[in-house]
Every structure is written in structure tokens, then in C-alpha cells.
Image (cartoon, rainbow, N blue to C red):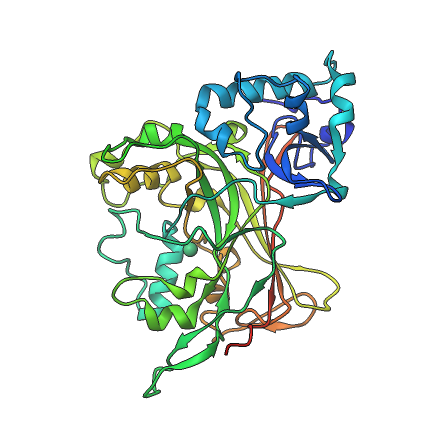
Length: 417
Ligand code: MN
């Protein structure tokens, strides 16, 4: 599919992240106005709440956009999702007869503040990157061998929805309990091994029934869209707490997502297969569609006071071993109900080369081999004041599907007591 031309001129640039082909969904405010739903088109945001109030969008006989989140639309299901996309494309296409009515509802993105685009009902984080799992094995256990279950199960843990925040929200370095290998007693204080995880977040649109298993194909159709996701991680807290029940406080203090939900429909031309299976998956984990997407990903780091950010990693979402649909199927297979607004983190995305590693733990090999930024600073883990940015783009024929940056700055730990 080529670039779809819009009467919003900035949307027609081949490198602009928000062409008519994209139409990602966010929540924005300007000045003192209340946050409301909007759609990115070029350098502008279409005020969807206003468009619905004026009758330009009427998908249901009750309002969907009188709330500052996209969950109500998600719950309507795929037919209404498709109808909205079709209607928005018609309103914003070059030559649209409704240009005059729509134009006053556009707000310059530069004047807008972006908010959480959805109410995250629950958050689950997976571990589906094979290179990452091998690297972590090599670093933590001295062997890159995968755990015995890894090639059979999309491993995950139930995380915290309460600490998922939108891009731009600062994150305080967490306090917690850690223990040095040779210490007799654990100690309490700010994490000294603060890290990122480069992930994609899949957003469940239509739910599943309690007690009802689903297939991979059903799961694929339930996914509404994707965001970039930074699963901030305190490696020293995690290292002391994680056996035998898995991550807890080392992961619970913050998860950042990019501000725009890029729909599965916009990503459809970029579907990519999962890699060859090294062990045959059990039949319930097989689907008929390519479940990954070809999305170029970058991680940037900028110390406080540095004049620019340095790219520290570049990889691709298609490096993953398990797709979001496989993860969602596995999540529901025992009867766990999935709901609109459920957020599934992919797991850290790392490619085979060192330049493709999606965490500082891997990039600095647990701090043993610090790396150097373009601006001269060296890093093993994150220091106070550092800003970390995730960026994602799918490259089409004369157009780009961008996600909007997922940015977070680390602030010093809060005083306790
Ligand atoms: Mn993670």
C-alpha cells in the first residue's frame, strides 16, 4: 500500500510518523482544557471528542468519546474499530468534502500535552526475546542455555497496572532491599543497578470470558493496537527477591508507554513471521497468521546537561520468538479472563549483535564493560538525571508508521522515613 494523501500537508512527508496510513489514538489537552481523545495526523491532532459532538463521527447511538480514554471504543469490537478507521480516512483524505467542517477541530500537536491513552486494566510482562533470555542466562548463571521451559511456554508474570505511566512522566529511582553476594545481611536504599527494557506493549481490545480458552487466531483478532513500552528494572532489587516466585519490587516502580496507540490495522502491512521453531510448539500455540511486525526500534540515552542523546541500541520487533497473539492465547488458556485495556509487554527485544541489545544489563554486560556515549560519558547502568528514549518506526512504500517517542527521565530516589 502506498502513502495515502491527506489535506493536512505535513502528513504527506515520507518520513513523518503520522501519515493518513497511521491514524494513531491518543489523549491530549491544551491549556486548561480537560484531556480528551484525539487522533494524530501530521503535525496536528484531530479532536475526536469534538468531531463526535458535532456529528461528524457517529458510530453508535451513544457517545464513545465523552471519556478521556479509548477503552470504550475497544469494547465495541473489530467492526466498530474498522468503521472508525474508514470514517477518519474519509474525513482526512485529500479531496474530502468535509475538510471545511473538520479543519477547525485540528489542534497543533506542539501546543498539546499528551496523557495516558487508555485505562490499563491489568499489566502482564513476558520474556519472549530469545537473545535476551540467553544473554541474561550468561550474565546471571554463567550459561546462555535457555531454561527448560523457554522454548515451550511464553514465560510471563503478572505486573502492576498502577505504575504504568505515559511518556514524559519522570521516574524516581526506587528504594528497595538488596544484598551483595558476600554480605551477611541485606541492606535498604536506592537501587544501584537501574535499567531499562526495550519492549512493545500489545493492548487487548475485546476481552475473553472467564473460564473460556481462546485460540491464537482469536487472540490475534482481540488485539487493538501496540505501544512502545519501557519496563524499567532495578536489577539489584530483582536479583535478591526473584527466587522462587519471580519479579516483584524490582519491576513494580514504573513502566512507561508511548503516548499513541498504533492500531493493529495500521500495522497490518508490516506483519512478519516468528523465527523457525527450535522445538515444536504444542498445538494450542499455533495460529494461521504471521504474528510479529517489522518495526525498527532504537534506544537513546542523554545524561543531564549533555547537548544531545546518543543511540545506544538498534533492533527490530521481528527479532522476538513469541508473538503477542501467542502470549495472549497462553495467558487465557487456563481460563483467565482478558479485558479491554489489558497491556501485554513483549519482553526485552534484543538482536544477536551487541549493538542490538535492548537493556543496559546486556549492553554493559552487568556493568562489567561500561559503554561510551557520543558525548563522552560512560555508563554501566542509569545515573540520576539520565533521560532514556525508545523510538519505533515501520517503513512502508513512501511512508512511515511512527509511534511517538517513549521518554522517561530518572530522578533521584525519594527520601524514606
Ligand atoms: Mn520486561
